Amino acid sequence: MKIIVEKTYERMCRMAANILSAQIILKADSVLGLATGSTPCGIYKQLIDWYNKGDVDFSKVRTVNLDEYVGLAPEHDQSYRYYMDQNLFDHVNIDKANTHVPNGLAKDAQAECLRYDKLIQSLGGTDVQLLGIGLNGHIGFNEPSDVFDTGTHCVDLTESTIEANSRFFEREEDVPRQAITMGIKTIMQAKKIVLAINGEKKREIAKNALYGPVTPLCPASVLQLHPDVTVVLDEAAAGLLG
Ligand code: F6R
Image (cartoon, rainbow, N blue to C red):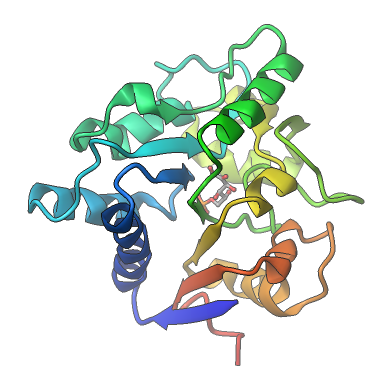
């Protein structure tokens, strides 16, 4: 595990964006695994900036997103498809047909999960997976549990995640209670992983995930077992790493 600490959130984003753009430059049709939430916003902004300067070309890039809420249409302003369009896809020359997000409206969620794992396989697997981390150690929507979940699956969100996400919704009742997420196995099959962590609130979980025991009670701790993980943190999040 390679750990890189940057002074500010902006510098952390630049470092993570560097890894993603290097991947695209080395392999134009790379499969990028992407995340949503507040952490990657600055990373996507940096990529858009480099795209505008002509430094990175998304025309052949393929993407697979980690997760999507169950019950939200792609046009819903809190759906992860909408987030990706707004924060990245609408601003670069990516072919939207090459961008994939689980279908939160699928009638048969089980079948959708199987389809999604097969899709990732058919693309040749994920070259680089970008991850954020939840305050409880979740990655994707793999919440703390007794076992490491396997493939893409449908999950009930925990109260702490619903509460954390409620900041994006008008009322807490509007936050979806379920999501489709890549499983730990799906994530661990990525050839390379970049985990971005920022802010003082994530100090404790950063320490537990990176240096604590590997346990499904802290899903991100499994990343300690992956052969090619780069963790980029700002100083605020790295405060307890010693
Ligand atoms: C989002 C995702 C989540 C977030 C995590 C951190 O696609 O999979 O695991 O990465 O909840 O969210 P933020 O960045 O908002 O703190």
